[in-house]
Length: 366
Image 1 (tube, rainbow, N blue to C red):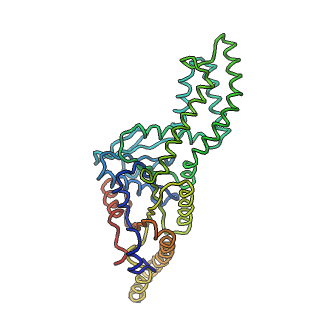
Image 2: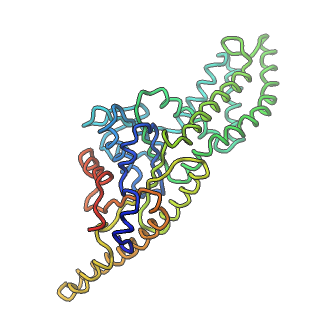
Image 3: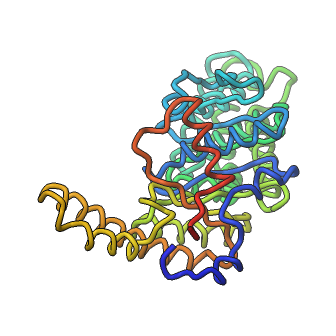
């Protein structure tokens, strides 16, 4: 890589994700970054490499625009499905709306079956969702984490949504704290309505075991907060959880990666790996290629010269931002340069071949 000599390279952390694959205590690996930088491809490759050294691995997409099915050329849904060609790698694509509906159904199922009580529960949930922005996502996330905690997988890889959505995900414990404060006021509001309904019907609006419905709903939210608190503690344990940042060598992507790294640091979440995708000739630098072009362009047709000139401009730009990436992260992070290929990385075979470069990357010192 340009501007880095052999001695500097020797002092940098190994430019691969081998540290993740070899860390047996890891349970959760989050892969995130700006939209369109290759998060799904990287997630799939990490999942494939982990499946080679773990008994069971699950790859979960939390991005509303699911791409795992496209990446593996196989349809996945909300239940873990074995990836074709593997006997221990599973995929599932989570729909946040479905999880929220599931949460609401679980609360309604805990209440009595009469229409008035069911209506109150529905109104309670609707009012809660509009009163506290993000509570629906927080509850959906709690449902997801409750699911995956009950599953028997050695490691779970999360293919996350673009950065903004991911940062909201990390703020869910705080959202739940606000939610439970709001619930007290909502309980007072709906509690009176429940009492009126029960008086009209000559009975109490209760759950199947005689519980007050309002108390039942609050208890359910407390349970959800407990799940998220447990998850939050695991998030902050570097032996259990790590985050892989994915970017491309362009200004906006590097800028957003830095924002993500800073936010992860605030949340206390381990992050010491950066994958840089779509790199032109990572084993060469722009100066070396420029010397070749200057010596060869006289013998090239005009169209070829124009094509090479555009490629050189792109290579110089990429080298500048890769240099900035090493300046920001090179001392403490494993920075992996992944090449731009002549073809799409889709299907099990191509993903498996590409994943090899995460462990044995192209030697940029050559």
